[in-house]
Length: 220
Ligand code: FPP
Image 1: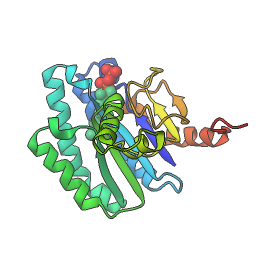
Image 2 (image 1 turned 30 degrees about the vertical axis):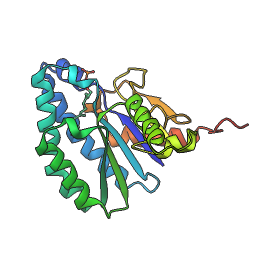
Image 3 (image 1 turned 45 degrees about the vertical axis):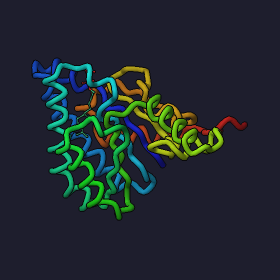
C-alpha cells in the first residue's frame, strides 16, 4: 500500500500557540519522524510519500525558505539512524537541482546509505510539482521517440507508483499539485488536525476506515 500525505498546518499551529512559524515546522519535522517509524512497522504500508516542499513554496519569505532548507538538512542528518534502525529506504522526488550543493549531497548520501532497505520506502517530495513531473515525463518520451501512452507516461514519472490513500491535514480540501497522476484512484481523507498535532493514533484510525471503503477502480 502506498500512503501519501500533504503535511499542512504548521504555520497555523504555531500562530495558535503564539509562536513563530518556524516552530511549527520544527514540530512538524518531529511528527514526520514518528509517522515514518509507524509506517515502517505497519505490515501493509510499502511506500510513504510526504510533501515537504513544493515548487510554489519558494514564494515564501526568504528567511522561512532558508529555515526549511536547514531543517531538512538537519532532519536527514539526524534521522539517518532512524532510517537504518527501521530499515527504511529513503528516496526523493522533484527537482533538487535548485537546492544548495550541501543539501543535494545530503539527499544523495541518505539515498545511498539506505538504498538496500526494503521494509518501507520513504519518499520526500522536494521542490516537487506534479504538473512539472508529468511534463518532464512526456518530454522524455518525445526525446526517446517513444509512443505517448498512459503506461509510458507513468513509467517516466519520478514516482511511477499509484497512491492508495492520500491524507491532507489542516482542513484544506485540495491536492495542491501533488501526485496528480498517481492519485487517479486514491481514497482521500481530509482531517482538520494541524500537522504538528497529527498522531500515529489518528493515522491508525484513518487506515482502519480506508480498509472499510470499497474500492472499485471504475468497475462495479
Ligand atoms: C505546511 O505548513 C508545511 C510545509 C510547507 C512544509 C512541510 C514541512 C514540514 C512538515 C517540516 C519538515 C519536514 C521534514 C520531513 C523535514 P504551512 O507552513 O503551509 O502551514 P500553514 O498553512 O498553517 O501556514
